[in-house]
Image 1: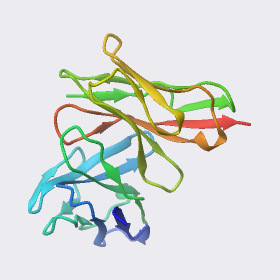
Image 2: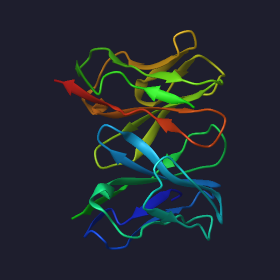
Image 3: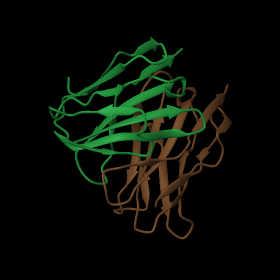
Length: 112
Length: 112
């Protein structure tokens, strides 16, 4: 089935460790996005990508790194995790301007 | 820059009663507006979208929203609430690009 999948669904790690969240979409959408969801803040954009090898910062990019070597994959890396990065992370994809985005089921990340 | 304000972080209605979730936007250009629903431990699903074709937009699950430019509003309504409508609802705006700006969400509780 076409869709967008995130892995892992749940992750617990320690401060200072590197962690990578995976996102894979099968729609061949041009655009992919990473958000974090925190109580009282809604969804905030971390990074997005317009195509393979094209990425750009969103509202809250500090402490995160992304790459997009293939259209279908858009991993998000926390190079040195901090407790403030404990959150639920959502990946989304979309094809065109002003069109809705399609979301994965999220990764719940806890940093101890 | 665009923004979205959702009035009321928590709304409770009785089963069978009218659901009204409020969304006001700020934009210097004609906006595209979206409502998403999030069920527990899931990603966001598109309920409906406004893309300037018609001011009254019908979505899934019996929801609809009306775009009112004079009031800069895009409130979500449903005539009769059902227990399955309990979820978190997000309003979002796009202003001519691929990025969405989300409100902080409204948690809807249905009282039996």
